[in-house]
Length: 326
Image 1 (cartoon, rainbow, N blue to C red):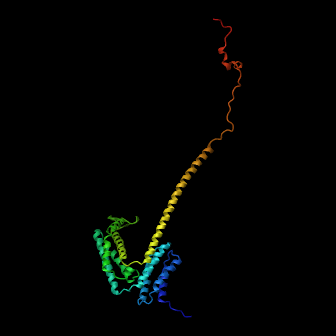
Image 2 (spheres, rainbow, N blue to C red):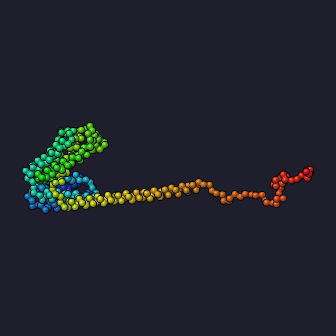
Image 3 (cartoon, rainbow, N blue to C red):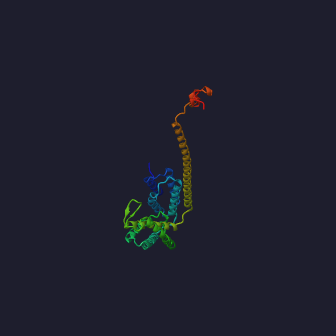
């Protein structure tokens, strides 16, 4: 029996499926199938594109870092955000004009210009920074950007930006100067050595490198803010996820309130039980009362003249007949 070669689309989807299987998360199999089907639908609409093979190659190479960057989740609303985001990435890659080599080089130059501007402003803002550490952090960050420009699955790495967008990014960066001061303080302020997460000390050079890297991550966030426009279905998924988070917070607050109310009720009930137990213990420790109350035996009553003399007071009041008369 003869066998047929899988199409380029099938090969790409198989590679994506294998990638998902190599890095197992906590996604149910149903979610994985839906995620893969979302990619399939976005891809198959553009099979007649002359750059179809090149776009699929970008998708295949760019999918792995995207997939490995996803957090393990059990929340359906967050999965739908990831699903909508990948749909956005693939549709933008497949439906946007394919970049030329000149455009890619222009985008590299723009990233270099923006990152050079950010590094210089960091050195100007924090005069104590080691320029070598700043330069090393900038070079590492730009290396990652250049790699994503070569495989532009993410929309911010596909086409050059306008001059206005570049200026907007730089302006947004300048407005974050106070946020970077907070970041510097969190990393240890101006101390010679600082504790990160309370369990290790780092040198000045390491701290300067880390401050630069985390600051430049804020810069990349500003790039995402200006290019490109997010599709409505992605914004809707984000909104639904926000509502789900609010509902979970509300449920937790209500559960906590109910727990506190029950604790108060149980506390009162416990006090009552302790009080009753104390009374019962006191009754058990009290001696039993005699069945008959004690009686007082009195001498039989007789007429006064019949009582014995001692009973009447003896002979203190008798008159002796032998006594002389006065």
